[in-house]
Image (tube, rainbow, N blue to C red):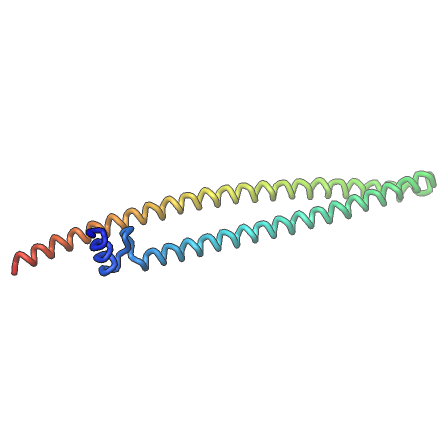
Length: 164
């Protein structure tokens, strides 16, 4: 019976049984939803960018491999022809070397970007954990502040009651 009176008194005063105002619950939930939505949007954007970079690298690698095959075939044909094509053979070899350097550079860039992504994601997760901890601390402080204010109001109410 007394728990009904307490919950009835809490409902009458606009305070939930967990010591929070209904508006605070809604605001906290809304803030949390916005944070989660932003996190998911960032994750999706990072994943899209990662996939775009990966696709570009794969495409360039495919082009480079095809170019290498073509150049190798051309080189073989040029070697068959002999000395009159020595200049062209040298140019083709240089192009093959350039293509190989490009392939190596693209592979390193891809690896670097994947590492950056992982590092950024790890930092994001750490900050998110820190924020969750701080939100928890804030909620505890707000609950304690509310409890102290209610206690002080009750003391003032008793004082006013004894003055009458």
